Image 1 (cartoon, one colour):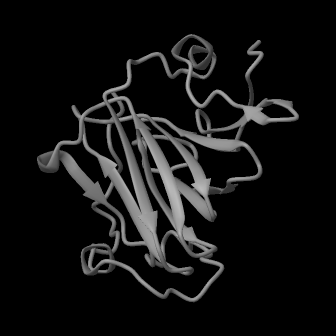
Image 2 (spheres, rainbow, N blue to C red):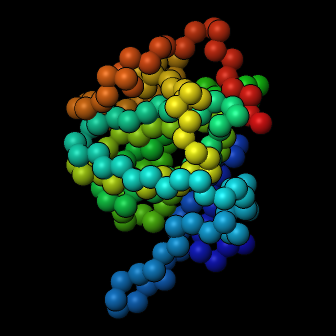
Length: 188
């Protein structure tokens, strides 16, 4: 059992919300974001390959739904440092009983939560406030030639985006819709 984290498994096996247990005093708080030793409990035993930071300026903006194909799959830990987002992960694991199901969590600077997304999931989010800063911890290096994505508005996924979309990249908007040929990705 971790002293710095509480791990809450979602209905999608292997997908966790991580609630941090900050140490607070009159100065403020200390909160651990990552600990390889403690995160082994939920299957994050890889070393960190990349840490990325995004700023999404406009409320209603969507980023996603991105993933990496084998052999460059990555586990991610997503943390909102400023603002608030609806963070979404879609199960795209071939043969999974929850294939194409999605789960969301509200991440913000107040709730001390992160989202641990395992291999075989697509990921994206919608900014619920302006000026959202998101910290991404990745277990693998980004490989442009292994990049994959789902269309955030795919009718098969039926993602319930809570706000009208204000901003979105043309690339994300133009990802192909799913068809019967998509069987998911083999998780190695």
